[in-house]
Length: 94
Image (cartoon, rainbow, N blue to C red; front, top):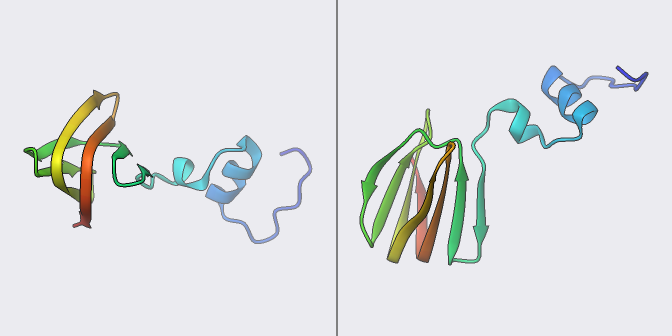
């Protein structure tokens, strides 16, 4: 692989390094991007478990994530990605 020295890197780190992509993408970790408390983009969604203007709960495979706040709205859902907007007061992982 390009003659690079990886030392004690595991396979995930080697692939990440060689392809120049974040380890979280290669390792299967869920990814959540926050823009302040007004927007969240969640990758690897497996389904919507609860939906209201105050609470949105998403299945992320092995885990769930609950967004609580006011005026919450799912602006996008598809291709294993969701975008939530509104005023996010707190996030709970389960």
